[in-house]
Image (tube, rainbow, N blue to C red; front, side, top):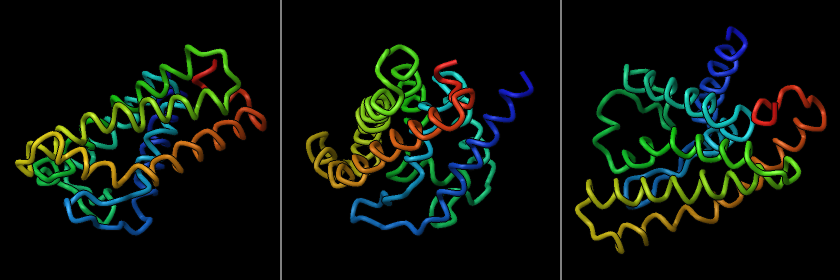
Amino acid sequence: MERSLTHIALFAALIAILGLVPKIDLAAGVPITAQSLGVMLCGTVLGARRGALAVVLFLVLVAAGLPLLSGGRGGLGVFASPSVGFLLGFPVAAFVAGWVMERTTLQPGLAATAGAVIGGIGVLYVFGILGMALILQKSLTEASYLAFAFLPGDAVKAVLAGMVTQSLARMRPASLLSRA
């Protein structure tokens, strides 16, 4: 139990640290950040339940006002911005990435890449598109076009998540809680 809490806190901190990478603002008001890589890693390394809990912890800290999002953003106001769908989708994305990782027999790198693509891109985009459509008052088609501007970077992040997870599996197999 104590070890799980430590891992959850460390991965919430990892997402916060990835927020230090400077954001790139797009016209839609949703920035490109490295934090979605942290969300993918939460699932692929910690597994579904712990990964989702790490992201929930991170979001609670953001809601409490800590400036942990890329660009030093934090507080309840971020949940009324065009990013709201992505933020609310973070825990679900981590859960799905972890679920894929736990259920597949593929080698860890391939399983993690698949989990990151399915959860960290597919699931996250569903939430993100719905959030942008709602906040920006766009159609789902228009919001989809806006969201797909993130696709090349997110594909790179999914591959990176697979590589990092594979490296952890090789160097410290016990640290890969999604396969424990």
